[in-house]
Image (tube, rainbow, N blue to C red; front, side, top):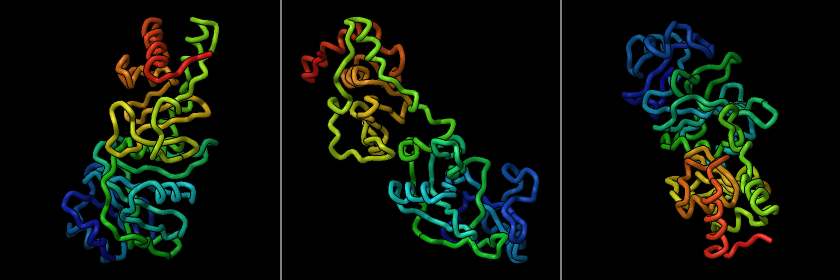
Amino acid sequence: MKIPKRLRKEDYRFIKIIKKGKYPFEEKWNKLNNYKYDDKELQKHLKKEGNYGVLCGPGDITVIDADTKKLQKRVENCLPRTFEIVSGSGNGKHYYFKCKDLDKSLRLQDQDGNNLGDIQYERKQVVGPNSVHPNGNTYKILNDESIKEIYKNELEGILWDMLAKERTNGNIIDESYEMRKKLTGKTPNINVKDIVNLEGFRKVAGELQGSHPRHGSETGRNFCVDPNKNVFFCHRHQVGGGPYQLIAIIEGIINCEQAGVGALDKEKFKKTIKIAKEKYGLEDD
């Protein structure tokens, strides 16, 4: 068995796995017992038909371990084509990326809590290509392209609705409704889609996704708008709110990272209402 050329890099590390197995058998494999691709001990293990794992983290290796068609479709439609492996089971796929700013592995689930897969990073491993599945089939290379670089906020932007513990924007509210009602007895009838130019935005998981109107985006995918819920969400800062908070951010009344409940006090809110009318032509009833 051979490690493919695509993975033969000095800063990549590999794990010894038993023949037709899926899990490491050496203790402390994620800290001490791992090997460079040309290590003699690892090569001896492979010659005896042992499997191997690719250690995530070193060399910024990040693997999206996609167990379901839903996750596979999202990755293939929304992320760059990259080094891609199909499991010996024929169902799962591994998509290799380099993510320099990721700090931990992430579990991916649907809205009902069903497992979709994982984003594997530090101290995690995936079975390497050319290894043999317990059923006798081989982990095969589907796409031998170079491993693409990607940023954490791009991953979160594409997969936000599948992130388990990290899913926060489901709780984002349009606080301006309550503030406006408190000050005037009325609720606003303006919508976030009237504030930003949505040309070029793409529809992902029922939302519109594009570049943040204030601080921009390196990927063009860090900002989401949900016109139905009348809220926005910034994946860079993991914050969101309603139309008045969005105007306040664009106009520099508050910083993006300050968005959320309590971001607009009475004076800031009045100033935002004035700008909404005078600059954006947006008026409540």
